Length: 290
Image (cartoon, rainbow, N blue to C red; front, side):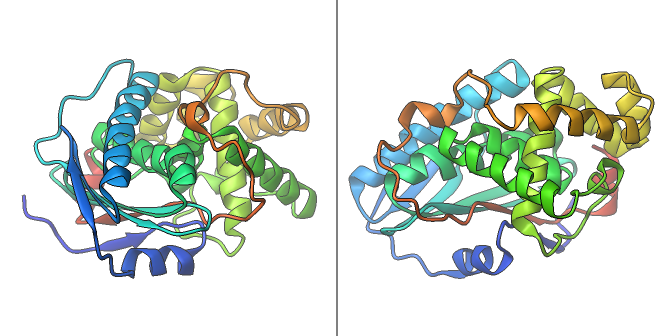
């Protein structure tokens, strides 16, 4: 089936993500691996990004799916812009017939922060896209991808979630699950998405989380909640999450994330604009087939 043009933009700061996606890239070198073609300002940077992209693809697929993905028929393009600042990324997908037709990742920032934070985040998006064959709910795609980032970023998003709950009480989960357009409070939205994703993963594992998402999109969130977490509905799940968050937000799961292994040893204290996802060619028929 041909791709029908339709664009949906996902991002932690929409303007920053859009600027990153549109910034021209003058690549100085390239590197190729089984599943990635990387363009970067230097040969060493291209090699490192390609090597870690393959590493994350293997590790994150095992974490979430219980097995590695087969090689993609067409390598994913990664374009890298190195700067002195924090890391950000944007990932775009084209879907056709319930599969990924094309995909591209763009990364910008310091190389150490790209490798520890932005790259595992964006690779997680590709794992989800390959598994579902279409886009996930925004809170889940971004929130769960944050679980792959290093400790520094995860702690930062715990703070975003705590701040959101203190200021506004956050979104009730039945509302959060149905959000289709990014709200104004993007960092609060990402923080709550991360916290809810962490809660669900810690209370049932990653594969149950994916099954919950699939059923939620197909049969509704109350039914998915009853089936996978044994709460009466999403409102009861909301109460359970809030009770958990009041305690769990002060600590992190001691198990390391994929990004922790190469996390930067120096902290500049600068803020970062996290990743985004752009979906192309997702027709109503494709959404119904997930």
